[in-house]
Image (cartoon, rainbow, N blue to C red; front, side, top):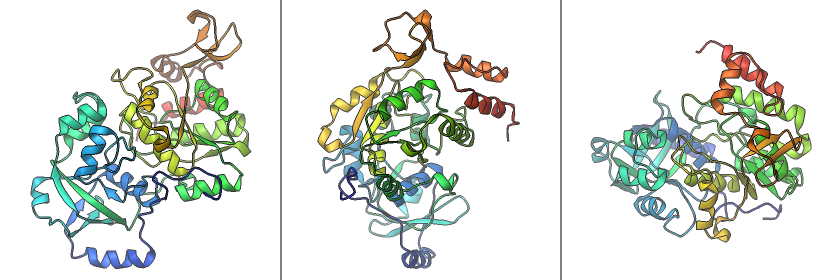
Length: 388
């Protein structure tokens, strides 16, 4: 690209958001179309389809692409894509829909979100998808649970988006077009993306700053779509990111944005998925740490790094940066990892999530070597707030 940034996945940003004139036309047409009510994950998918973050997708996967993604982690044209983006309906709903016709996709309030041109309706094997994508058939896995709870027929075809879901964190909700423009304005060409659904503690800060030493800028890009009920709410996390960047990061080298996607908790496959989305946002590099997008004990500690070896780097395009688990070493008097520290675990300040939550509930600041006090105070205050 002329701005020196990495090209989007597939070469071009595919923007599926209808123009103002087209939106009006679609609204009028939709009144006579069959309606399908979609949930929060599909609303998030539509936004990513609208803004180009899911490039090169034009809509929900047809059968050939679905089967190819599930079985090979590539689209049917050979381009890497690791997580299926699908729209499921009941057999009764599917029976009333005709391939080649249009379908109105509406939210729970009945408001039009998009119009789907139905190319294909097809059945699928939920257990096979679970096994391939999530590496388990256990319903205890939150991603698998969603698949099992889905309806039995998938609708494939391109979409034209008329309206976006509620725009929380609007000031940080950059589209790939906007983030690329901001990178270009700053003169950034090599940009490292960081995915998180958690507050940033000192180990995260350490690996981000290590990566920042080698590139022009850091795109701190937390996910703010659906997460597990016991994950820290996005609004609390955003306050943590803001205070951290304000006090400990160079303002001209870091940009904070949000990713309005839903977590799949697909571990290794989701690491690839997250990397490809950040490629579309303009990131040339992507940080992959310990147990990326993992949950429970379903994935090996560094499986999300190993999976990158299964792809042609040229087709993947974005460069992963791998980090081991980081900690503060009292003997080294610095942040380190097993790669750089010769000392035993007794010298390492490494707290479990359970221990951190216990300290925060007690109103006790975790050690400074583990968490910045400004971040810990926000978390302590959030734990004291009554549950809505």
